[in-house]
Amino acid sequence: MLARPIAGTLILLFPAAALGAEAGDAARGERAFQRCYSCHSVDPNEAAKLQGPSLYRIMGRQAAAIPDFAYSDAMREKGAAGLVWDAANLERYIADPESVVAGTSMSAPPLRDEQERTDLIAYLALSGRYRP
Amino acid sequence: MRCLPMVLAALAVASASAHTQESKYYELPKGDYPHDVAVGPSGEVWYAGQNLGIAGRLNPASGEIERISLGKKSAPHGVIVGPDGAPWFTDGGQNAIVRVDPATKEVKVWPLPAERMPYTNLNTAAFDGKGRIWFTGQNGIYGRLNPTAGDMKVWDAPKGRGPYGITGTPKGDIWFVSLAGSYLANVDLETGTATVYEPPTKDQGARRVWSDSKGRLWISEWNSGNVSAYDPIDKSWKKWKLPGEKPRTYAVWVAPDDKVWLSEWAANAIVRFDPATEKFESFPSNRPNSDVRQMLGRKGETWIAESGTERIRVIRHAVRTN
Image (cartoon, chains in turn red, yellow):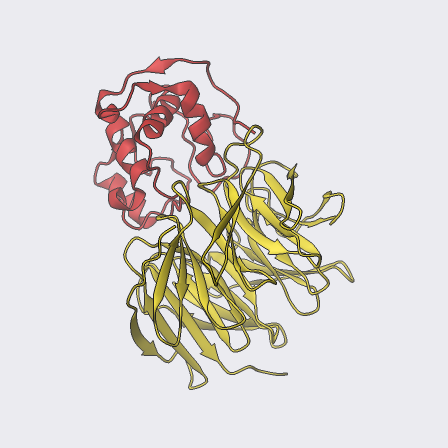
């Protein structure tokens, strides 16, 4: 039931996100992505109509940047205020979504394990940085 | 396991639209994040504290709140009260079905087979007429647990990810809906085979489902803002758009009097639909962003989990007959 992998066992470093954890392991991160899988995809050709925005090339993307996606007002306001999804902000958001975007419609519970967060971010980074 | 008796703060009592209804709000400890709620036969109310991994138990009369830890990695999404009077949780964090004994507070955990699916994003559960609990996992599975034998079976869902709400009919049949797949499905209770029924609106986002007393399936459609109904007897569909410019229909629960209760996010309100008159009646929350993800009640009481305000709301209402 794992999502389709987009790479093998590439290991990436995220100093801002690591914060005492090991460097992010994208292979473990793919497993952690199962927590996101029901609502998000990293496949640029995803056909399913999902409740969350695509995470393909999320790194460096401004919050609420996908034009036709039905973001919450809270997320739109954060995007307009300049929130960009870099490793540090993703780390904070995954750890406690409400504390970063109060009123977000993402209902996923906080991911408490720091290593798992770091691994997940490493996995998300595999698709490359955002290109407008 | 830990038990932390808490003092309840019962807040405002507000009349909804007429003297026949009364809303009461129960403030929960900050961080509890009640995702789902269920009321038992004795009137005690359970909620799934998703962010803290707890079972919450509210005594509506005294206002006392008790919190029971479900496990280190617990993050319960759903809760129902089973035929045994106990709360049963679909626990995404533990990837397990979890039962709490109301008397002893013993927590029993039935994990899903981890080697095949370490995280299925467990969603909601319902009992069939044979004492077995059926459940959905939003990552693309549904399953069945016989708690007496300890036997669990899991099947891949049609169209992959999406299985969300699930319900049992008065006959004991099991139906579920798929949010990403936008369908209603009926499962064969023995083979587990799912038969898909497509609602009339394409990509409607069927989020939750509930059976009325006659076995008709009522579906809250998130993407379309509709409530739809499927009658398995004559295989007919009906649908109605909720009031407002762009409604978002999240939760559905059908009361014993067959009135259909829905949560609607755009209006921040609970809506009651009367199938006989085809009219809607709105009961807005008294705070913004209530984010009601689920409701469940009993005769004359609709219990509501306000995940956004971290409160439990009850609407007490006169039971109508047509």
